[in-house]
Amino acid sequence: MKATAQDFRSKLFDKKNLKIILTLSGLVVLLLAYTALRDTDTLITHKQANILYSKDKIKKVIVDGDYIHLKTDGGNYKIYKNAINTAAFFSKYPVEVKEDKGYIFDLLLLLILLGSIGYLFRMMKVNRLQQLRQIRGAREENAEIYEPVQALKSNVTFKDVAGIKDVKEELEEIIDFLREPQKYRDMDIRLPKGVLLVGPPGVGKTLISKAVAGEAGVPFFYQSGASFVHIYVGMGAKRVSELFKKAKQMAPSIIFIDEIDAVGKSRGEFRNDEREATLNQLLTEMDGFEESSGVIVIGATNKIDVLDEALLRAGRFDRRIHISLPDLEDRMKILELYLAHKPNNVDIESVARMTVGFNSAALDTLTNEAAIYAMREGRKVVENSDFEAVKEKVLLGKRKILSFTEEERKIQAVYQGAKAVVATWLDVEFEKIGIVTTRLSVQEHEILSRSKLINRIKVYLAGSIATKLHYNEQFNNAGTDIRQAKELLNKVIYDYWMSEDFIVNPHKEEELMREMVSEVTDLLKKLGKALSDVSEYLLQHENIDQEACRKILLEIF
Image 1: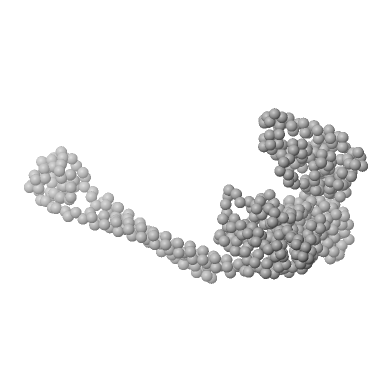
Image 2: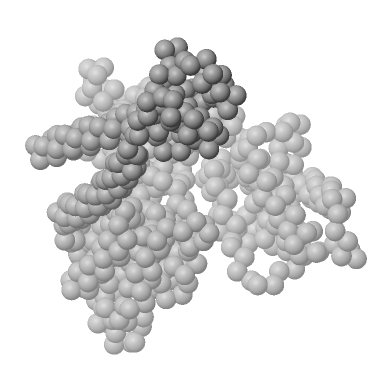
């Protein structure tokens, strides 16, 4: 109702302004018209005036400033008074002297101009006051919405989260610290202030952080990164300050910032004062943590590459935990968890195999849709056929989810298996290579040899070369790897100048690429048996680490 009344007043004010502007415009037009129509006499020359004088057609002479107006029966004329013998005209015809009142017109125009300027200044002042009232009202409204940060009590534990065995191990000591901080203080042990969960959407980053809080039995403060970004500079920073203040008061506690990239993007060319102020406050708060404050910040993102370097340096988000899409074993555990309270007769392994690339959120949706389908069909038990019936529906709603046919799984197994074999053979370290993921170890060394960089490029090329050897065909799954290979090769040639005689040109780049393709082709032909075994391993387990791949190679060679 308040907004409606305000809108009405605004419209009424606008109508009033419009009437005033139209009135002033009308007056100006009338004055200009009066100026144009005030003097319509025809201007004539000295010769024409003498003709009128000699023919005695002039009835009256009017003196008006610098002009002499001649009134005749055939019309009215005017001539500049110094152009004729005025004495002759004045002695022959009746003369009228017109008082010059042009100053009145000029004064009126000046008054109208000054009034218009004053009115415009008044309008500007009124508009400024209205803007200030709106800003004040928005701040008050924001303050009403901006409720104090509330701590949550998490009822989620690791029993409610399946398929994250590696992540659990990483977080165990964090949980232990939150449970018994004094034990660590006695040993003068400092745990990370921040933990960054990195992974694609839907893998359960928020759920994992709630489970950590639930396992430790500590207060849980949840905030979205976007909630810190306000249109008014300083509001986000204030919210960050209050969040950390509350968390310290209730320590030990956990602060979870979801989608932290919304506020933690790199500070660069395109400035955003509010976001930068908020990020600076976040950095300050993390630096200001007392070593024994008992507050741990957990951030979640799927865009670690856009985060500001200051946020990732030691002393802030020291620990990073990568959460991949669940593999076969993980999916089986997740499905088992989601089906625990649903009457079912499901072959969980079969369903897990047909859901390659599904994240935990997608598996939750799939399980729920399968149960709905079974109920719609009049059955009280969920079966495999229900999952098959709704799989396409879930896929259409989850475009980013990969789903392979059996033939595509075999192609992808050969492709990824070749990368694992070549990486192991060439000592390129990797954490895990799966049917849908490749996690090569991050190169943290400042100085890298040419051979190490070349070997890394060969790993990127291996999958495409292997599928071409095996199927005599190329596939579109190689796009990302080929792009990475070319980008790294470009750096080797043009940024690092790693070519013979330091000669840089496109010919060197092409020559080196052909040389690497030839070497990888020969290597894969030599390691054909190992590639076959690794591909089969991937079909069975969907993931392979470097140790398992090394064992397969050792058995053959």
